Amino acid sequence: MEELSGGRKSAIYRCGDVVYRPLQPWSPTIHQLLKHLEHSNLHQCPRFIGVKENQEILSFIAGDTYNYPLVGAITSAEALTSAAKLLRKIHDATASLLSQMDLSKQQWMLEPKEPFEVVCHGDFTPYNVALSKNLVVGVFDFDTAHPAPRVWDLAYSVYCWSPFKTHSLDKLGSIKEQVARAKLFCDSYGATAPEREQLTDIMVARLHALIAFMRKEAENGNEFFIADIEQGHLQSYLKDIEYISINKQKIQLAVCNK
Ligand SMILES: Nc1ncnc2c1ncn2[C@@H]1O[C@H](COP(=O)(O)OP(=O)(O)O)[C@@H](O)[C@H]1O
Ligand SMILES: [Mg+2]
Image (cartoon, rainbow, N blue to C red; front, side):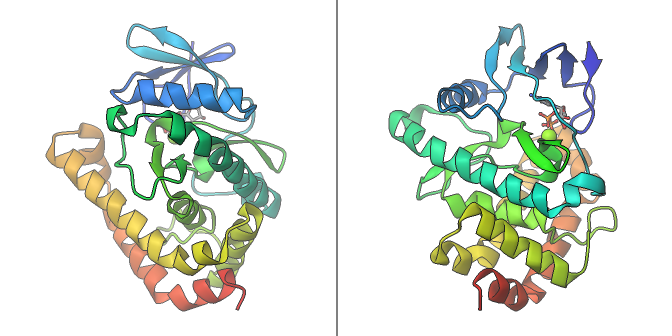
């Protein structure tokens, strides 16, 4: 058994072709999602294999994994475009799942957001994908999945992949390069004109929702989020909101092809 790094400490283990992750209250919903993705031939996502005591067993996605600071293949244009195309495939595949689900009976980690167009991954970021050379060939960590409009996930992914991040460890490139990456992500996803027009505002709204979630979890005694806030992550999100707001016009002009 090998502990996998890049996420929570002492929580995720690999044993050959499978991964053991802690079961959560929302895991039955996520298992339904993973089964649906498997039936939709999305082999880039982990397959749900089973449950053992308080662990879920998922298939291991082969490939190189990365974390901030982003260096190497993960920063390439190919990685960005293949990531956006994979996000699009996942969204397209989940639209039909929503019509089969009784949403009032499903539990999710993050609050669903209307209108329910697709199941968003919720954390489709450079640290949750697997690469083969410069191409994104897989994605894991579906715990944050929740029903929402496509642009809700698209905006958060653009924020992380551009990235519009200000912390010295997380940032990459100049604003000009970040804006060009944001446009490339939207183009590769095939974003509509209305999705592009809302992008920056939704990015900020998504970050505010994340901050509210972190605060609520910390108030309820969730030690992971208490530590996360103590380490300054919430403050970084607030700084990023400011950065995005200052650069709103530049981002919008580029993603809207103006
Ligand atoms: N199904 C999987 N296939 C391959 N690697 C995985 C898989 N699940 C997790 N990992 C590895 O374990 C790390 C932590 O798992 P992850 O599911 O992202 O948990 P966390 O919620 O703690 O971020 C990931 O960054 C990745 O490297
Ligand atoms: Mg992760």
